[in-house]
Length: 354
Image (cartoon, helix red, strand yellow):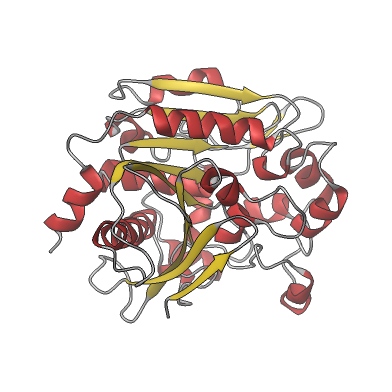
């Protein structure tokens, strides 16, 4: 159910929105997805919108961490005049639970497209709340952290949802993990055409075992200066014990779609990356799951503008870094530099589906 609140401290409107996913190809019936829309209290003229998709093991709360002050990316952008939309993937967070073994990259990307276009359509129409007038949107930038970047690649190629995209800690070449000795950990991914339902019968996948090595995960996910209290929350129950789920913060989740195993395959979404024809910003920490950020632009051969930002003092989970605001500024400056959408691609995609 949709809900609304006003954050007095941040002068920000907050809307929780459910999107009916009926008709999305590849999904079982009866599903809906969750998103939270953050809007400045005072709007004047066209605004830029940023849409965020989290990585595996995280909910949309990753973009609005409230455990300590200054860790909400959503609030940071809203305070600077942008609208931010944080989305839960299908089957994750406050979205309807579903069979995670049946989810594919294509169906998850299609669900994310439906979520974004529903929210954008309602923003434009002024139907999110009686307290919010129609919003004139200049451009819409999609951002994806890790798994969210993989799904964003498929989404943009297949649906052209956004006027620009930002890949956060996602490698279109080969996503893998950094090792403290400087080498890379390359778990065996499964092919794109692999029958994911058989993973349940095969038992634990290589990537899950690596993901439970606390020392390796800590090194790759968190820079040594990251706040220790937040790191402890971020890494709570990385063993994936359902009995310990209560130790995890609201922005962490045990649910991992089976198609996560495909994301560790080399070039798994290379064809989709090559089809993206809007500006691309690639962001990585100096320690990250992106082996060579400077090599990534070649994967986006149709994009008219590919930029790369590598942040010192930052590991894979960017929003915990002490320099997170510097990265958010890069994202904001990129999003506001996108030309006003002549084609209004996100609006057209909504209308085309009617």
